[in-house]
Image (tube, each protein chain N blue to C red):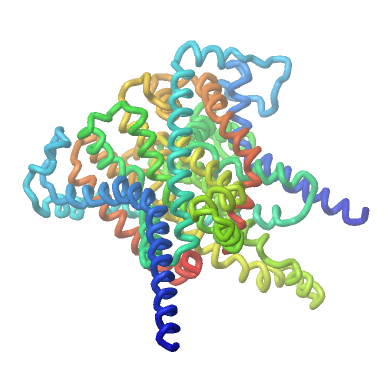
Length: 312
Length: 276
């Protein structure tokens, strides 16, 4: 009697484990194309970057790179070059200079769009629009607006009496970095608007009602209801947008190519110029490894907040 | 009625904000449609002069540059890349949402890690790989490159979206004799349409905007995409601004239409993602 029961139980356990195994196989099968895509087209290239970074010398024949001698020469020459550290500084200034204003604009627009008002849907679309503009196009429009002789920015400055002479924004060392940061802010803020707005809309309305009943002022409502509700997504958005800005290429490359006199040469631009301008693939790869390490450091610093957001 | 006026005040504020924030796009359009004498001037007109509209910049740019070819190339690459990565990301996002495989967390970190890779860096190995397989100047290689870059973020976006769809629905379908894949295709995919739409916009914008791959993997001018084409104006001696802005308007138009029409999906997709 109990024997039969045990047998039946064993059978059902086996059936269950068979089912579980089939489930698992199904789960992996669905994941396989993504793993292949990420592995073949992102992880393998990363491996190539690291391996190239140890190949010494310079070669016009990229396919012969793996026949060059191994060594730390690239690391020595890149890390010993003051231009590298200048690029690190430019990258950091560029990233922070973009992130802070973009976050402020994004938060302000999200708070505005979180209200109910007529035509909100269309105005929201318009406010998010810069996000859809290709970086190269953003760069070109600002290049025209900041044009020295016919640019509208200089015209407005003249009208307002703020500038007497024409400022050549992109070809002056002291203004070029500012002139590439402005378009980057313009392209970056909608991501903040979008993610913060999404987070705000998932805050239950009754929390606001309760706060209002308690007589909370608008700043108090923001500090005690809105901010706790959007903090997690905000941290995630800052990290993602920060990573994107840190590696931004299109806007700077189209506007200045890193000049004048390296004033806008971020690490990303420098890596590209080393690789496709001077054909020092090894040096470019070292800069790439450096960028990866810096990005990794940023992610590690935000690790706790990220884990909550990503793996909840 | 009492609440109507403050609400309209918000509309006015939002409209004013839009005017300021969208000035660059306005300026681009204005430069494209006003005669050169009005734009290339020390005192440019800030408001459109309706009587002086001049569409010649549009004709000029099509006559001088193979803009149509570039647009077509961009369209092909964007469509292909969006489709490829949407399918891959939908399958992977569903898998990550429904199954707690040991590989899940690991995959999650890998996907995040790939977000940190600069395009200007990935392009070096891509260039080497494309050279090895003689795929330089191939639009297909460009498509694959763009597809690969989109997969990680799209997967996460869709995972968040699938998390919001109750499992009971598929389980019911499976009890009715549907296979798991069938349940996914017939029940989950139709419900996830807003999420898929959001994801598709994201992917389309990503590949339409691509510059670094197009510039590096494509040499032949007839295979250029619109972004490489636009940048080629900059290097020229004495940039023809009205023509360049006209080309910009044309290249931006499809994205703007797509974006404004589908943007609600993006917001709802992101909201679903935020709620997971």
